[in-house]
View 1 (cartoon, rainbow, N blue to C red):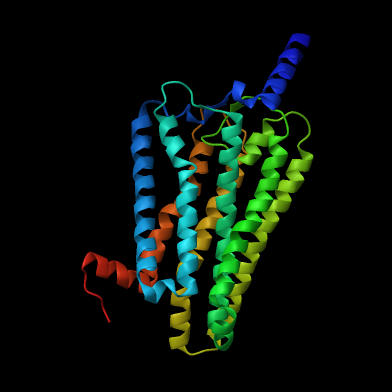
View 2 (cartoon, rainbow, N blue to C red):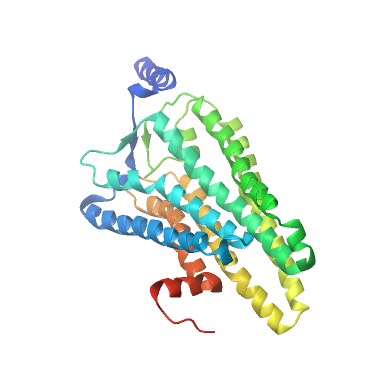
Length: 324
């Protein structure tokens, strides 16, 4: 008994004061087995598709003066850029780990860095969608004030705030987690997240959980409520307007709503899966955790096909005729 306690103490001391001397084992890959090449090529295709499709839409927005001067398209470009970088914090290492001959490992410092960036880009998605909802609300419900209030300076400030607030809040959660020594070095995950990493730590995690709930409320829940409120107000205005106005307004808002619903569902599954203590050989919780990638795959498709101005530029790029 005393020997086991001594071993736990030594591991804690080792990880807490010399994280470069030990590694965390990612046990979430145990279910891959003989199908690892199938999963590898599926995820590789998904990653290539995410990068290329996002780059195409970003190119179309940046190269067309009719698009990159409009706040709505600037926010779309920011969201797609956010998705691209966010995907790159997960997929490259995931692809390497799938083909690993030995069980994949990661250093505590790299693990905490990956966890920060995954949570940061995830939270930034919600704050960006909240400023997009505000932009659509002002455009549809306050059209006479729109160009006075939503200037390029305002857009830059909104984008800065949408990235700065999550960076500070997620940075605080990451700092709290990194200061606690680890007692466990086996994590049943495909990648690192702050909650799973916190569970590896020694002692009480109450303060970290409270701060985590606060961060989730400010970065996810409040922006989500604001999105629902904004589109609710837009719908109320549309109901009192002509059918032509309603059609145009809903056509503009539909892509944003679809993207938001996608993000909300994927984030909910990620939160649930990170709190599941499943058998390392079970594939269910780890497959669920990959749902977080679905919005990054769907975003360029939704904006490319459901946003009329972008679809027109896509057809022009492909040499297809545009319907008037």
